[in-house]
Image 1: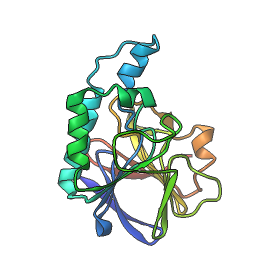
Image 2: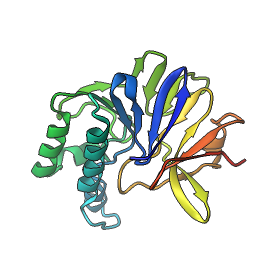
Image 3: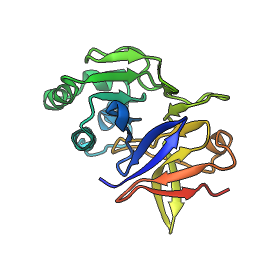
Length: 216
C-alpha cells in the first residue's frame, strides 16, 4: 500500500493511497464519509438507481486498509451511512462483515450531517474526539488547530484527471471521501479555499499517494 508520510501537529501520520489516514504510533486508522447504503437511500427516495454494490466495495477497501496497517483503533469521521434508515436497511451479510471488522477493535463513529445520532450497530458514538494534539470531527471549524475532518470530499484535477485528495496545512487536515459512491468538491471551491492556508498541500489518492502544492 503506497502512502505519503508527513508530520502534522507534531504527530507522525501517513496518508494512504486508498484515502485512509494512518497514525502508526497509536495503531489507528481514520476514514471519512463512507456513505454506506447510498444506493438504497437513492432508490428509497425515488432518485437515480445505482447498482447496489457500493457497501460491499467500501467494506472491502476498509477491510484491506485495516489488515495492511494492523490497526487496533478505527475512527469513522461522520457520514458513515447515507442516512440512519440506510444503516437499518444494511443486508445481513454486510452487517456481519462490518461486525467482524469491529470485533476486538476500539471503533469510534463520529457524528456527521447525514447520520447525526446513534445507530444500533456497536462502537462508540461521539460528536468529536480529541486524542493528544489532534481533534477528530466531521466538519472543519474556523480557527481550529490540529483538526482532522472530512465532509467536503475534496478532489484535485491533475493531468486531466480528477482524483480524491487529502488537504493539509499547518492547522487542519481534511480527508477525502472513502465511500465508493461519493462525489467530490473541487479544491478551489470557496468552501475549501477559504479554509486552507496559503501553503496548503494536496495529497492525491489512487495507485499512489502523491503530494503536490495546492494550486491557487
